[in-house]
Length: 375
Image (cartoon, rainbow, N blue to C red; front, side):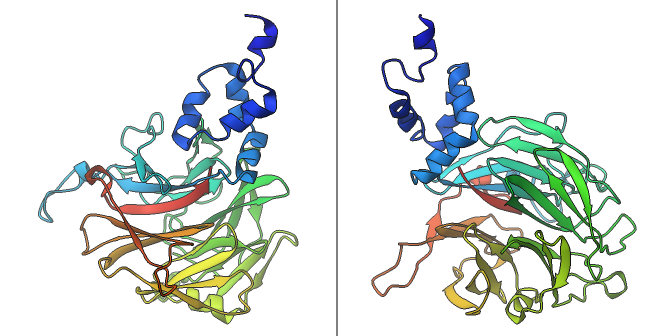
């Protein structure tokens, strides 16, 4: 074969036509495409390829969960099983496909309990958590390539080994950053400290401290700021604050949010709060009403839908540009159920309706964390 043919993406086709073919590959085929040849591997792994795919409207949502393997769940509440085995699970709403990626090399006992997830481009960052065998906090960082299917170890999180911290990712000045704040140390002391992880540089940087310690706080990124909601100090265990602090990346400073709408989302009766890629902030008020607020919050919260009546416990919620997914169970410890609410799926009265997702038995375990990508 001539050198010219070897360098063609698809022999006999102009380069731009061949790229148009490749960007239309479904997500599950992208990894296999990298094994065709070195040229395809370079193209499919390159940022311009995925920018072209997104610009053509071909990017698809991908949801990643930290989920227990149902086979590791005790048969009854009176059983005394070995530690639950948590693994990654990937769900693609466009195809209803469920898969389980490879485990982290050298961790046959599964993912850390209560680890945090951050979506960074086409990579997943897994931070912290507890060793499932000893329940000791870990400062480990692992990065998984959704397209490459390869794990790599990241730089350890500096400072005290923390648990139940706020975590969120954002792209700033061409770099993917993962922000961490609050939580508690191994002596159960609530923390004010904060960090940021540069994924490409594999380096951590200390941020200024927050104004107050915040254990079990929530975090998300919107409007150029990492926002940390709620939490409580050491001396007030479980007494959640309704305050919000925001770290502005441009000024590199924390400030009290002073936003009554976001303070509502910090209410401990609010079960969950997430933010979509396009700046829509969702919350579930007192476990039943799903509400949404545009970035900036000038119009306040608006009702989106009521939760499906079947979901009563273990609620989780994740959003992407055109959709929202809720997971939960009918009773504590029951199998996981999932529903999706997508733009353009309104009924005759213009009300957005939930679409139930078929959850295979092997993917019905308890979910501890989740995040969304567009690939």
